[in-house]
Structures are given as structure tokens and as C-alpha cells.
Length: 394
Image 1 (cartoon, helix red, strand yellow):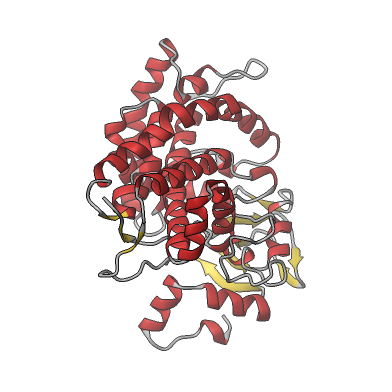
Image 2 (image 1 turned 120 degrees about the vertical axis):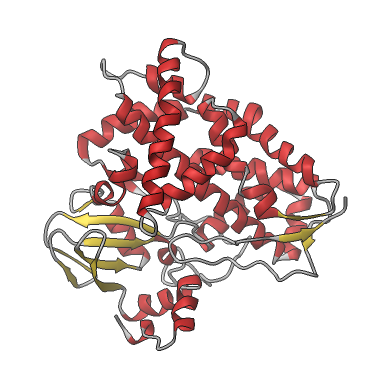
């Protein structure tokens, strides 16, 4: 590690884990491909890749930089999920699943599920004049949408959120992750069997009946997809929505513009996804000896592809650390790129657009609570505000 990563006190290390952007900025300038030793979880020599062009190159070259490492890292709790597949297997599996995310389904989910879900949550807080938008809105909204899309009882959303938190925390608490995975399987198997016999108008039915060239998904593959979808859909979108709200609330002049002109909401979303990428790392492993920006990388090495760092690369974005509502449209790497680009990105954008519009509509004169500490986006692998205390006109 470089001098920029060395801290003699626990407080300094803790700060880096909560606020790593300055460290990543220094590394981009000094050591953009950074050896971090042998990771205990994979027992591979591990490198961080921090610059935009290098990150994009890795994600667009699946032959040299494989996704199979996800089977090692997440396989015990996700099974053979699409996220760890390569080549033709990945293409076939993605094609089969992608049909469930077709445009007509998104349009229906928007009006029949996403909008009613956010307004139901807002009904509870709108008369109060005060709320914590993380506790009351963002932590509940996306997982309720996922439950609705799957066609399972929405009142089970708290259990879904617990399972999502457990599965994504496998590196910290593998026992809890395994328990969450087993519980999700036990919950979903009877639903899969029922939908196979009695198909309905939901995602589970779409997946159990989907067919391409005579192939259907096995129960194991369907369960693996759900163990990927629920954490991905619940965890990442709730964090992204919280980051969008912090961006607006800490830029009140820009908030006023967006309140007056809701057509700016897509710009809010895209700039926030770039500025604060809620899931900061994508993992890959090398299939041969190679190099990145002159740094030799051995075969079978693990790569921590730092999309959050790439999205603030000064060589790619002007004033990269600033949240700028008027930034000209530029591609970002929030959803990755290449063959493994996030399948749910259109759903995530739809949830964010409908959710933010509803919050601004239903909570007039929304502003930070002057009696509470201002919200702060924090975290290393996952970044979002733990709370957003606000007041508004009841």
C-alpha cells in the first residue's frame, strides 16, 4: 500500500472506510492500479483498479477479466447466479431473464406498483411535517417494489429487506448470509411450484414459463436469480435514492429548480449515480497474465474494479467531485458496462424517477431539519446516508 493508505490510529482508518474518495483520488494520481495483497476470501493476489479508462477496459473484456470470481465469493449464498457466468452460458441465461424486464412490463409496474408503493409510504408521513427519509421512505420503497414484482405479499417486505442485508453482508457475517439464503429458498420454492402450475401476471410466472429454443430455467437457476435480484434491487436502489435526496437537500437552489421543473429529475438521477455510486466495487479475475496501465497482473488474480472512483476520475469528468445538475450528459459506470451491464438499470431509473417526483410533490417546502445533524453519505463498499432528517409543510 502507498503512504496515502497508512494510518497509525484507528480513527484514521475508520474515516477512510467511511469517506474513501480522497484516498481514491490520490491513488488515481499516484498508483492507479494498486496491489492490496492476498484477499482471505478468495486467496488470490488482489489489485484495485481506479481510473475510468482502466475500469471501462476491464469491464468490456470478459475474455481476459472473467466474472467467475463471483461464484467463489457469492456462490455459497446465491448459487450459480448470472453475475458469475461468462460466454455463451451468460448470453443464454441473460436472454431468458431479460424477457421478464421488457418495456411493457416496466410500464405496467410503474403505474400499477411503483407509484402506489411510494404514495402509500408518503401517506404515513405527509401529515407529520417531519421525517427521516431513510427510515420512512428509501429503506422501504424499493424492497416493496421487488416484492410486488415477484407477486409475493408486500407485507413481507421487512423480511425481504433482512434477507437482502444478510446476503450482501457475506464477507462480514457469512453465517447470517447463509441463513438468509436458506430462508429465501424456503420462502420462494412453494411460490415457484404454484406459479408453474398456475401462472399469473408477475415476474415469478414470467421466469418459470419463459422459453428460448426449448430451454427453461431450472428451479436452482430461478432461485439463484431471486437471490441476486432481491439484494440488488433492494440494496442498491434504496441507497441511490438516499444519495439523490442528499444531493438535492444540500443544494437548495438546485432543489428549487427541480421542484419547479420536474423534467430535471432524470438529470438529478444521472448526476447522482455518477457523483455517489452506491455500490463502489465490481469484482473480476484474470484468465491470463496481463497488464493494466503498465502494472503487470498475474493469471488468476482478483480485481477490485472501483466504479465509484472511476466515476470521479478528473481525467474524464470536469470538476469531478462536484454535484452539478447542469453537467452535460456523459456516460457513467454506475451500472457497469459491457456484457454484464446491470439488467435492472431501467427498473432502477424508473423507481428513482417516480419516487423522487412523488417525494417532491407530497412533501412541500422539503428541507433539512435544522435541529438535526446534516446527512452524510458514507461507506466504502456501499455508500449512502444512514439517515436524512427533514422537515416540510404538513
